[in-house]
Length: 90
Length: 90
Image (cartoon, rainbow over all chains, first blue to last red; front, side, top):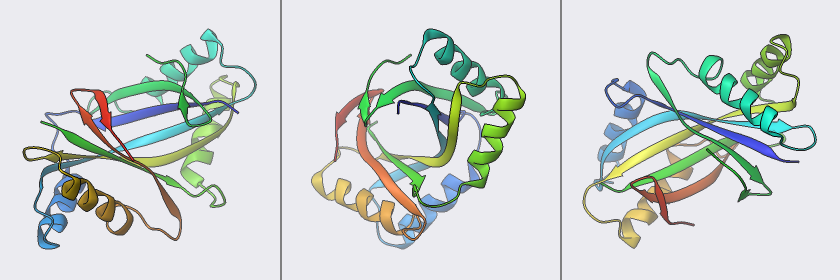
């Protein structure tokens, strides 16, 4: 069944304490190749039947109203995947 | 600067209460085209300089040891992105 992937990341100007903690942990573990880590969210919405333009519009609307907080987060992707292959996107 | 994206999703057989809550909210909001929602995590690791094979190996190792809990989560992607374009992957 097709799925719509929505990626949400903290805005670049927003401090990301979880990402900072991970970056610190990587340093302590001796993995020093990374200068910054940021943590966001990834949602997979499974679609009943076919992905119509209307469904995609619903997903985009949900992405900005329900799945993210527009004050501190950006929706970086709303994209259809069919069997792990990227189909149509934004 | 190049970034390595790591996607982590709950294993299919694991219950995902956050996803369930979102699916319920979508239904209540009248967006009935979605049968299931699952919520995972997305990490962006910014790389100092060039992405070598060693850095990619470090990222893969971090993905399975630090960024995910292998008991309940799958690492679904470890991929280099350069300026929002997908470069090299797993």
